Length: 377
Image (cartoon, rainbow, N blue to C red; front, side, top):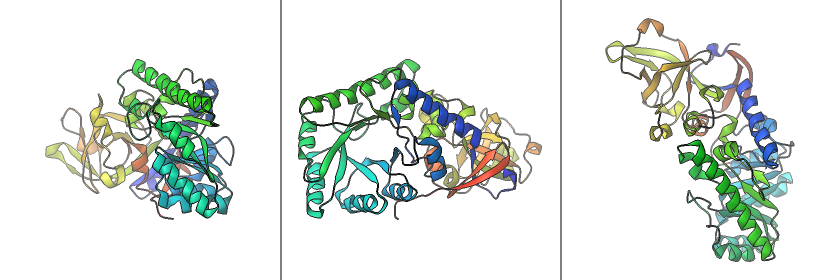
C-alpha cells in the first residue's frame, strides 16, 4: 500500500535512510577500532536493533528496564541499562538476567549506590555487574575524573556486585557551535574515560568495559585510544536537532510524521494539520540553535523538503504550518486531506507517541514494525 492511504498522524520510517545511517555509525566504529553498543531508546524496536547490533545477542544499550526486558525476551543478552540505578529496581534487573540468560549491567556513581547494590546481591545470592558513571563535561550525572570517590565506589562493589567497567556520555557535545568544538568534545570524552579506566587499573581493579558515546562525538571522533565501545542512539534515525549540531543533513533524517491537511486560515497564512504536539512532541530543542524549526520541518508526501514552510506552533491535535517569512500561502496548494510529512526536532519523544513504524521506500509501505513505550512491564 501507499503511505498516503494511512490514517494520520502516522510514524514513517524511511528504510534507505535508516540503513545508510546504521552503516555510517558502523563505519565510524571500525575507524576507531571500537565496538558499537547502539542505544536502542530512540526506536525501541527489535527489527531495528537487529540491523544495528554486531550479533543477535548484542551488545546494546537501553534506557528503561521495560526496554531491557523487551530486548532480552527477543534474544538480546549483552545489555547496559544506562540510567543510574534506583535500588528498588534491582529485583527487576536480577529477574531479567535470570529469566532470559541476559547480562544486564547497571550504572552508578556513589558509594551509597555501590553499597546498596552489594547489600542486595549478598542478601539475594545474586551477581550484578555495574559500571561507574563518569561526568566528562558537566552535562549530567556521574563522578568527575580524578575524584577519589571513584576508587571508593569501585572498592564498595563486593559480595556479588562486580565492577564491569566505566561509562560516560558527552552530553555537552549537543551544545557546540562549530565542527572544531565538536572535535574537541569528542577527544576530551575519550581521553577522560580512558584516563579513569587506567587509574582504576593502576589501583588493582579490573576494568573490562570503557564505554563512551553520544551521536555527535561518535560522528566527530578521529581517535579513541583506551575506549572499548561507543554508544549512540538518535544517529540511527537523526533529527532536526542533530542537523543543527552539524552531524547530519536534512536528507539523512529517516523519521517523519505523516499528517493530513484539515483546514486553512487564509487571512493568517496558515495551513492546519492533524499533527499537533502530541504527535510531534513538545520538544523545542532547535529554538536554541541558529535555525529554529518550530515544531517540525515540512515535506511533501514523497519526503521532499518544502524549505519556505515550518510548523510554527501547535496545539494538542493541531499543527499550524506557515511561511517562515510570514507571507501568504497559496491555499490551492493545500486542499483538504493533502498528506504532508513533518520532520521532528527530536526523534525520541516523537516516536514515543506511536506504537509502530510504517517502514517506507519512497511512498510505498514495505513493513510495519512494532515498538514499545513507557516503563511498566
